[in-house]
Image 1 (cartoon, rainbow, N blue to C red):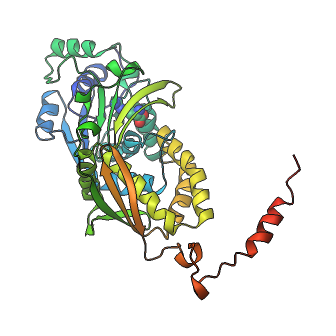
Image 2 (cartoon, protein in one colour):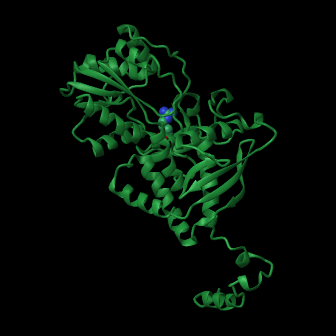
Image 3 (tube, rainbow, N blue to C red):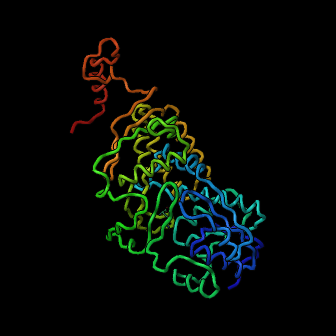
Length: 400
Ligand code: ARG
C-alpha cells in the first residue's frame, strides 16, 4: 500500500474499537506518519480509562480525550429540540448532531498538536463521512483528510481481525458483533447485520438504554419539565445542567421503554438504510417542548417555524451544521423561541409519552376568550364578528 500524499502527523478520531485500532496502525504503516489519537467523551458510556495506553500500544505518539458532554447537550441537542428537528418525521438525529461537534474538537486538537491531516473511521457508504468532512472543510480547510475505508482494500470485519493478527494489534471485540452501534448522550443507533432485512424485527436483547414497553412498570411516572426560551432547564422543579438533565431524562424514560424507533431512512449519499434507535430523553423533550409551545407561541410564528423544521432536520442530517444556510435557518428557529417559557407535565407509560398538562407565566392561552362559558366583560371576543369573518372567507369560493 502506498500513500496518495505526504502527511507528517495525523489526528485520528479514535474509539479504541476494532476499526479505529486497525486504522491507527494502517496510517503509520501506509503514510509513514505519526498519529495523534483523539477521543471525544460524548456520553457513549464506554470505558475511557486505559484508552491512552491502548492507543500508544498500537503506535500513537499521543492520545487526547475531550469531555464534550455539556457542550453536546447545550449547543447541539437542545437547539435541535428548540427547532423541532426530526428527520423524515421519525429520526431524532442523535448521530447527526454529534458528528460536527466531534469533528470540531478534532480539528482543534489537530491544530494544537501540530497535525497536518485528520482521519476518521466512517465508511464510504454512510452519512458520517459527509458530516465529518464538511465540518473539517468549514472550520479547518487546510487540513488534509484521510478516510481509510475509501482507500484501503480491507472490506470487512474479518479482514480487520486478520490485519490485527498479522501485526499483533491488541483487540478485545469479538468477531460476531452483530450490529454497527453508535452511542452518545442523546441516543443509541443500530444498523447492519440482521437489521439489513427491513422485515426482520430487532431482537429484544439488542437494546441498551430502554426497557421493552411490555416489561416496563405497570405504574406510569409523571414528570414535569421546565423550559426557558425553548431550553429545558429543570425536572420536577430541580434545576439541572444540560447534560445532567438529558442524562436524568434518559434514565426515567428508558425505564418506561420510551423512545424506540425502527425505520428505513434516506441517506444523503442516495441509499436507503434500515436503522433502529433509542432516544428516551430526546423523545420526552420534543414532546414536552411542543406542549409548552402550544400555549406560548403565536400561531403564525409556530407555523413558520414548523414549515422550516423539516429543512432544519435535513441540514443537520446532511452534515451542513456549519454552513451559511444553516446560520439563517437557525436564526429563525432561535428567534421563534423568545416566549417559550413554562412547564409541561408528561406521563411515561409502557413505551409512550403523553402530555397531561402545560402552564406558563407568559401563556397566550386566554380562558376567558376560549371558554364555552360566558366569562363576562373579560371576554373581548364577540361571537357576532364570526358571521362576517366567515362570509368574507367564502366570497372567493366557486360554486361546485
Ligand atoms: N443512520 C444514522 C445517521 O445517519 C446513524 C448512523 C451511525 N450509526 C451506526 N450504527 N453506525 O445519522
